[in-house]
Amino acid sequence: MSSSCGGFRGRGFMLAVVLVGVIGCRDDAGTGAGHSGGQDVGGGGADAHGGGETGSGAQGAGGAALGPCTTVDVIAFAPSDGGSPFFGELVPSLDGSKPDYLEVWLGSDATGTIDLLPPTNLFDCGASTCVLALADASQDSIGAWFVPTDGTLSWATIEAPYYVTGSLHAILTEVAIDAATGDITYPDGARCLEITKFDFDIPRPADGWTCNPTYYGEAATGSTNAYCDCACGALDPDCLDAAAPVLGCAQGQTCDSEGACDGIPDAWTCGENSYDQGAGNGCQCGCGYPDPDCALPGEALEGCQLDEVCTDWGTCLPASWTCDPGFYDTGFEEDCDCGCGAFDPDCFDSLAASCHFCGDPGSCNTGACPGTIDPMNNAVCARASGGRSVATQNP
Image (tube, rainbow, N blue to C red; front, side):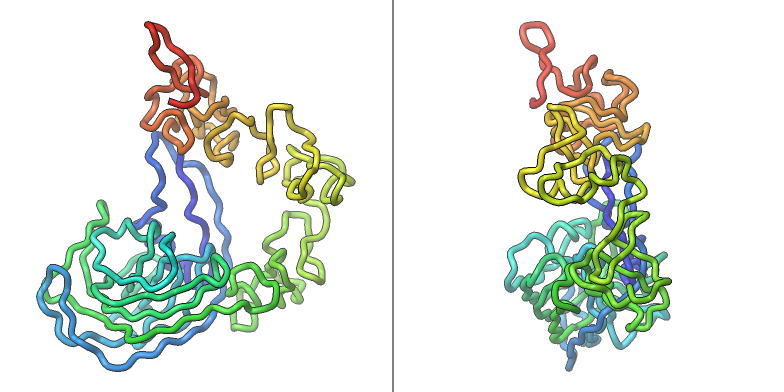
């Protein structure tokens, strides 16, 4: 099983290929190909400014004294599609011909003031708060990596995942990174950068707006690839352009004058009078597209078996399924997930020999296939008990 890291619009897309390739999604190990995923595309940006004054000396972790650091400022600080990581451009430019970037991952750490300690492995980024500088960066490569060897990051969440405020001071030292292991080494004589003080505050562009702030009014920022972002809590000015492609709605829907999706999705296979009819209409599941009525409390589930529930994707799921609902019945031949408490229709048959993924979170097996998966019933695991196998959903 492998999950998608999500898409990037605007500045983020340029670094996504390199960063995901090096840092990765931190997926669980398994056999076979990863689950298929999708990405959004687009363009946009937002500005924020940080100040910088004089440089200072620094000592690289494991390296020789660096001497005066190059002072840099941060501009155009904005979130990527999913919020973190946040990207900002470093100015003035370093010695390369391509832009230089600050990258800030705001992990699950408690908000407040965090001391920036020298990291030892790049793969830790994304799982915790992390600050990086990327010199001479493009979609294809990064010329040099810098990690913090001193400094503090103070931040608070106004509303997750996009709206944050805070301040950064950092000394960042050039490092060498092992692409295979993520291990970081600090060579003697490495360069260093100093961000003296960068204050950031990402505001909501309009009352009620819930999507990425860089998506709002992209055309007004000079973007030639603006999208009408719908269902974002407020009307996107880009939607006033009838030629702008609509994002956030299903194929077959339009964006109305209040910024809400209107109409019935082309993928909807049930009756027209059963989609998004409001309270009392019931939750229609298995209709090719999620019914908004399913989000309403107390709606009767229709279209599924008694032992099934409706997923966020509008599909019926066995109530006994213990793995990620998105892994069930994806329609891909090599997405057979095993040990998840119910048979996955992606499997050729119920034998353990058909399994592709046996260590999904929630699976009764924690290792590679076949592991402890029951040889004859790949929905569960088997334990030896008195000389015979006993099927169990939880080891």
